Length: 304
Image 1: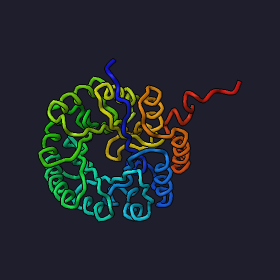
Image 2: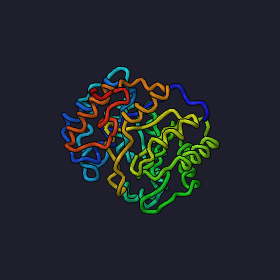
Image 3: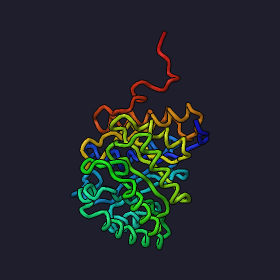
């Protein structure tokens, strides 16, 4: 086994990617979830997305959440945007880190954003110019990077074309989204290797879903290649409204539990995170898929 990193960075996406796939919850619930997460040791939180409320009604109160949430001094907060109008709203709401998403799959991009991948990339160029002009950074997320529920396998060359175009437009960092959990460790290794060969200097984030049970295995494959930046969702909340069967982001507490036991520091208080996962489960009113939430950490022993 190759040398592992000694620490990694987590971006908690439950308040955005998690809640957008649930029945709508109140603004107060979202604020409480963000506040609780802000006190777990997680250093970054994707708080909201600025999308049209007809498309994602769960995010209709994004501006209110942004205006009312308490921003901890040691936490960075970001927003996801689908287009230039969303970017303008996010910047006006005080976010200086935004993520913009584009699908490598043309079919998924049209269902998600009502435009082709090429058209989204043109819009991303304008988003990056706007954000940089206002002192903000932009991460370009390539979704369906390891497969599309409509098109099947996406050629690596197609994914790299999206990445190359985003970098040429001035993207500050890159992310790959496993939108429906189609990635496996071998596929992860291949795409990371190709991306690193082309853009070794660009920070890389990975966003895995556990739809088919390979989420943490994919994290391990990436760790072995030195990737140290991952998304995760408290309790395993989340999915994609435009990708059938996409439920199940990797649970933040499962990721923390695994890598901390491997000697990789996350800076996260697992007990506080589990308490927050329990709150999230209560808030959405259903049993969440996190196994660590059910069983507890391996240090929790049964009564003799």
